Length: 378
Image 1 (cartoon, one colour):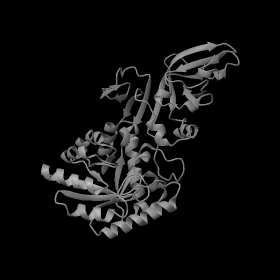
Image 2 (cartoon, rainbow, N blue to C red):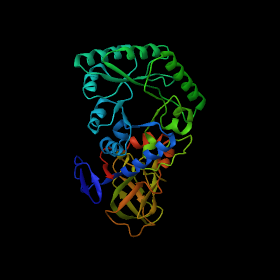
Image 3 (cartoon, one colour):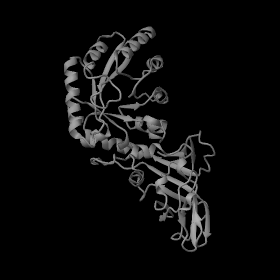
Image 4 (cartoon, helix red, strand yellow):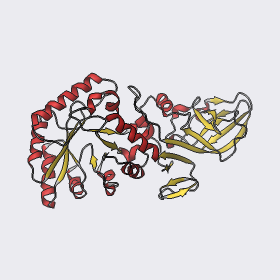
């Protein structure tokens, strides 16, 4: 990590001294958001979901901050993500599916393994026995997501099998909501099905969890007995899904800035950008910003989106292109080459991007390009 201009940059970032676009991540606010989520769910354990490189924000620095704040465990999508943070000493769990060839490395590094069928369970038991270790597993039950997990008819016997294996520790059972913010009734039925499966299995399981961020906000039964853990991803970063409740006191943790690389006066009648969608009505001061759709700036900001220069709103004119975006600087007469341009942050909420793109906040954050330098406030 390298400090420059008051921010901390990973050493791997090329030419970190002069980034054209920077995504600043407030690690302290992530820690505060974790505490707000803890307060909401009472004494339950909290799993921080850091899939997809912590939604593109950087899994290692985010995980370090959460570990320092006492997070109970971290959930990831695959083995590579798990191995990048196991040294922190916080339990790391793969949430989705695992391939047979990935089982040995997971057991060697004490990664919690997801199990959805008897074949995977048998492979875990076999490899663990050969290594002379105990493998920790959690069983994923499909109560309505339709994507992964043991079917309700198979889950009780799978739980009983795992509980009797000498080299397997059945640590938990979990499921997932597909629509907690839209279909609360369906989510409640999932909860009842989950509880019935666990009761039918008749084995002692330390951890039971079904609540994701949407579940915490919209389905209170998801963090009441018998559940004793919740999973949170998008709320850690201060955002909520498009619909549903927004009761927790979490705040956004990211700010996106880019550099003004050109300031020019254009004459009336000139057109701007691909497709010539904007025509200058009169002499106009036009700025070009070094950020485009390759960096995650939505193309839907074309002709009407907003950026900020020196705290002044500057409308986007013309199409957002791959590397550059043009803005009107008529209200910022002192704007100069090299000025910082705020693209996302104070007064420019992610919700605006989400609405324009017709998408979810998850996608908007994950779409931020990898050539945008990541910097961290800690």
